[in-house]
Length: 477
Ligand SMILES: Cc1cc2nc3c(=O)[nH]c(=O)nc-3n(C[C@H](O)[C@H](O)[C@H](O)COP(=O)(O)O)c2cc1C
Image (cartoon, helix red, strand yellow):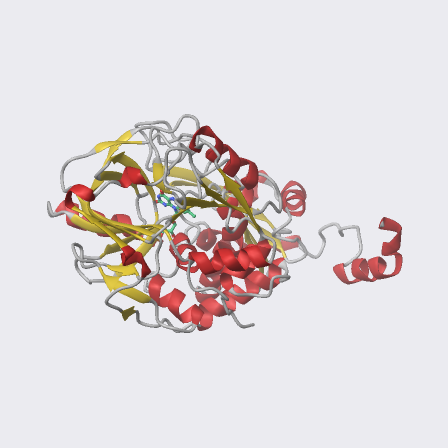
């Protein structure tokens, strides 16, 4: 299946979304508290539209905010350039095939682009010129970066990474970031700070959704997000070498902030409503960026993806993408006959991972459990990983819980792993003790030794179910 995104930047994405009746407009809404409340309502309503907000009281007309862009499968298909009617499994399989076969394309350096329409330096730097709401009632600041790829470079290898990390306005010229331990941007930043050097960073606060998607999932370590997004689109990504940091910034972005993380000073960051549904990391001293330059298009569009209780917008799309990444990891690790993988939305696509497989040998299920709970895509802040037989639909919570309740003996088929990869956002770890967590591995497959004697499950096979629906489905209408 071909991926052919019919858009090239955020504006052309908006035009496409409008054409297919997936976008609504709001004008004149108060920034606070309405924008955060509108986003929450959209995030928690199935099949809600993307919304473009404009004309905020006290701000220039045309300074806009887009929310809920990838909130349903139809718009995710648009963002990836897939058929709009694509099914759940079809989408996941197409994405995995693409991950397996894509040859990254080196970026294309250009001298200028739409993002250079407005360049603010020195005294003119003022990040408060953009309308940025308090996304949740108890937030400690206005978060200009919610759907914002942060660009960093590894000082040792020169490798450029884009990762979506939150960014809070501290004042007109400083923004705070929070990056969880183990994320690529954190590793880059820590290397500079350990040497007492300022870390160059650029933040894309609104821009191409394909690049945003690439920056928000755990692409393999050696894949650069620009090169991946360029390859998916079939042409090298246009970037500009940013004047102060030397980092490549997208030529067609809406808003980019560029500057340096202060090597030693820290400022309070948070609290911020987080993807687990809590203010779990509270307020802590965190590094901040001294902004040297702001680049933005005329009438810039901020992209807003404020976290909400799971599942919310990114969980609706990352379930596909992260599940496919895990399937790829299991395949690469040599775990045979994996028939399904799902990173469940209710756990923010991290806390609950399910793998289904056709058991081939003793220990097969445990092998999959160990890899699935520790992989790059799924290892961070996992809580429960489950392996089920191939007759269980890994995406169906009812089916999975039924398997746990009926095929898994807690005394012999459940293990607890200690001191695993967590961080400040983990709500069940007390402040002052955060860093590690424990996790539960559940083998919910029929026990290998007596799988042939295990009670037969009642109910027809999927084929018979389909045939019954073909014949008798009219009764349901
Ligand atoms: C909307 C959104 C906001 C996110 N915010 C953060 C954040 O504040 N800090 C963080 O470490 N990860 C955050 N993430 C997760 C990272 O973007 C994700 O783990 C990504 O893979 C990181 O890139 P990396 O693998 O190159 O480190 C966020 C993801 C999304 C979709």
